[in-house]
Length: 119
Image 1: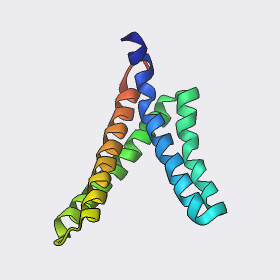
Image 2: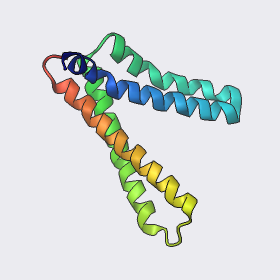
Image 3: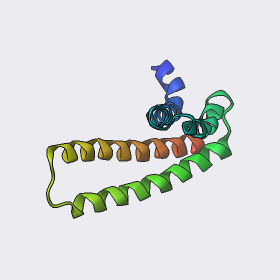
Image 4: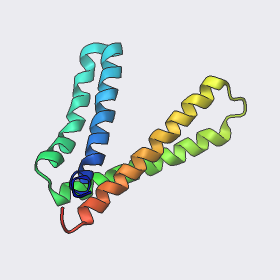
């Protein structure tokens, strides 16, 4: 249990790094060289893993809570405006909903880590 508590604070950063890696891979397959600036988004998360900084952690958390809140509002407006849903659209909306909720939870987790005294 002690090992889980020790490494659980890195879960949000690893999650966002995985999202950035997936985003880079997807754009790189379609666009090629123009996808490499996407990797710059991973620098703050890598920095937090190797050399934690409470202020950067709090800033990242607040930023992603705001972005996730906007994504939740956009997702809900998309859900309520669609009348005819095909099977593929339902599947995309389920995955999109999971992604939006996971982003929000991870952002809150980062804020909790920044407020934790033992970070």
